[in-house]
Amino acid sequence: MNILLLRPHPGNDKFGLGPFFCVEPLGLEYIGAALLPAGHQVTIADLRFRPGPGSWIKRARPQLVGISCLHTLEFDRVLETARAVRRLAPQAFIIVGGHAAAAFAGPLEDDAVDAIMVEDGEVLMPLLAERLERNESLEQVPGMRLRTPEGWVSTPELAERPSLDLVPLPARHLVKQHRNGYHCLLFKPVWLIETARGCPHRCSFCSVWQLYDRTCRERSIEAVVEDFATSGDSIFVADDLFWYNPARSLELAAALKNRGIYKRWILVQTRTDLICRSAEIMAAWRPLAKDFDIFLGLEAASDSGLSGLDKDAGIKESIEAVRIARELKYGINGNFLVDPDWDEEGFRQLWNFVAQYGLQRAGFTILTPLPGTDYYQSVADKTKGQPWANFDMHHLLWEPRLGPERFFELYAETWRRSILNTAGDKGIMDWVRQVRPSQIPYIIRVLWRTQRMMKPAEYLKEYRATCPATGGIVS
Image (cartoon, rainbow, N blue to C red; front, side, top):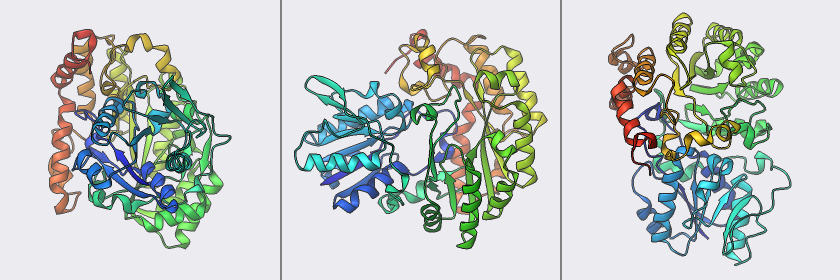
């Protein structure tokens, strides 16, 4: 069977750190790896690059099309892509999957879509393809929302979540045409690696733990080592909670060293309280890359702020984690959540915390109720009518306490205190000196795009154009 897997363009990326991050569609690569042994002809097309879907459909002549939907903000673009596929390949079966689709399938239940995958695609897509080839009923293919003549129905649940080693390595060769376009921060090309899936914690703003019922599955040491060995020199580890399992983390570090696997750069994501009890693990991992960055969800500048987010960690852990990481010569990239309900003191408290602990490499996102979370359900009335593209954590979804004009003045000032402000402590030439000459056009282009985050008028213009309460256009 000819199968086409599509990564749509996410759409609006005027604000935020999107220009700094463009990573490979790892989920599609794992699905591709699961399909190839059955003899299927698999094509992965990343629509963030040229050409568009029409050209890929002509090349692949697909009978089955899978469209990834990773983030809520992509819902409308995913449906646009599905409708385009329907016009160009009317006989193809179209299925949508990915994190956002699984966490909150409702908005994707559209006539342009035949099914929505709500469980792991590595096990379900081969089953679906087999049933389609045999022209058999699909209602017993588990883990889907299925469009039928009687409406949308749920197929049976999986008896248990499958082992991640069902597919040990992703089919990275299927995106080789896009490889040089994948980048993170100052590094390109970048390879994305997953060593575990899920999270046992309960942050109120996060849909990961709710989707996976606070479980965490791990890939085998052997598979992860082979993935590191066959990937390039710059690695972003996609795990939501790296170093989660202390014994496994030490074993994995030792196995990488035994294979002589060392990288130019590694970026991982983890929690502050985990770092506070993992100094030995971090010391073991630090030699594995020349530059080793950690992304921390710092979230708030006070214990009350963290408590309100159900972080189950305090401000002391944030301060101590930063100290430990810096002592071991890790780079710290963090993120803070800015609450629309803040008064001016909330912003000043954040500015003071950033300045006191040197956290200018942080990002600042607006606290956003993501579908699939309890938080979304609790404020659903306040977000009615909002276009899904506004759920990007950089748009206001309701009137802020300070009013939009003052809120955006203070929000833009917050970004001006970050290292992205080329008029601040780190000028554009400081950035240029950190990259290879061939990457200078890339870094200049990215920095130029991010400067609008320091301009209140840019936010206000977007707010007035897209927010339903202001009479803006809603897609």
